[in-house]
Length: 526
Length: 83
Image 1 (spheres, chains in turn cyan, yellow):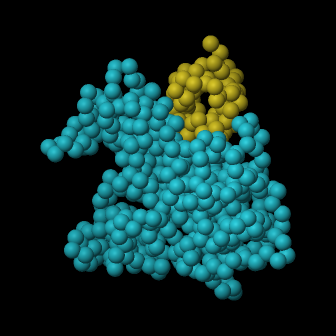
Image 2 (cartoon, helix red, strand yellow):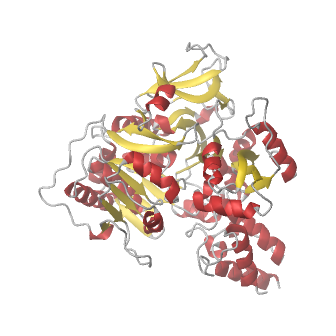
Image 3 (cartoon, each protein chain N blue to C red):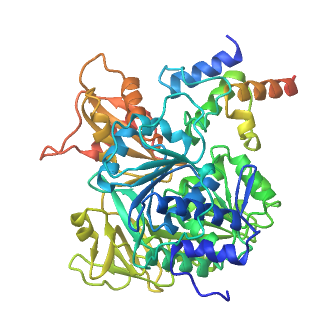
């Protein structure tokens, strides 16, 4: 690259728009958007946000499914100096209200699908001055009680529009992640955090402008966001496919668009292996340079099956990270895939990983302790949550909550999590948050939500509960859950018992709950 | 009961908790958020068992499975081919 490295996240887009204005940056369904088109759209939005009073450091909520509009909005908010808060567009009003309260956003950019939620949320924070929709509302339901602007109506910036001065230490994004206390925590990432991690990933993946990434993971989570930033930084192309539930369409598009990289979480690959024509298509995936996996431990048999199903020239890259690390912490060089198959590899460039004992000291090889990371990619802290920040950030760096060890060659192995968080279908979920939301129904006396190991999903959420009376049905509880929670947090089943098993100090015995669920399901862990 | 009615009933009972007001026969399951990838697997199991067909991996496409109408068309094509 002959240009200076970008110091700001939107610098990636600016540089690629200067280098490759006519190159396709994003493909989604029938739309192919060039770098110039996306940059112009982002500048239009930035100018509008600035003119309407959005200032550096203001939170701007982005609720949108993966699309060209998402990309335009994401970089546009950053150009305006805003802090992008990408939220799951499926967030229900009850989940959104506390986030609005603690964020005090000045603007919301949303897809028309979110208007129902925005209409029923019942009051906005005083800070919120406008909603920007990426398409005109055509459905009935009445106007929103706040000024609304439509993306397509945004004019080109006025000649005197001046982008705000932004420092690399300014906040760029807040990404919500479920915390161990059940309340979602907002991970604060600066421009420096994201830029450092993006360039590090670009270097170990050897990304160039010839790379074409298939993106099936949502951009509102850190891994999806990282796929976007790295490919925009490299001047490559991102192919958005939101229909992974139909994996044959994804495999077909990978062939048609000559995709060079595919990334997923363990359940993505389990699904691809079991319900897609991946193996039958291996001769046609001639451009596929690598697949990368992160988002939790992937079983060895899936790794081996994937190796068999993929073309010989396609590398498998196992990675490990955290939202608190702007995405990535380690990668396993594919040259050591077989030899170190259970390892998450070594720290990526710019990151240091230590295994730390209970007294804070660094442990020698082969001793298990907590995985602690430091580097420019580590978050500033959790939004308005000093207590939680102090718990995970100290002089050693970021305490991941994962336990593990390093072997004699320096390769790291994760042995388990130090708390109860679960990965279900690629989402990080906290059972307590789900339990709290469902208990609001007043239909149950007590409830425990357990992750039952599942070959495809990583974990399947199942509830064990005691209903308040005989008239309460499992379906009525699930119907309430479906209204109160995004779909990925809704348990797949609820089993009723007279009361939940408890241990000696009265706490619910989760292991015993799991055993009851397994007996009721009549199946063993996959 | 027609194929469309059977499929509709299954989706309403299993994913909409009995409330079919949101579901038209041409509603996309995915776009409307009614069914996710796990749910699609349940739909496939249902149509395989109910209509005696096998859904192949390369047939897992929205045009075959992403609405009541698409499933009805898919079943007709499959059973037509089989006849």
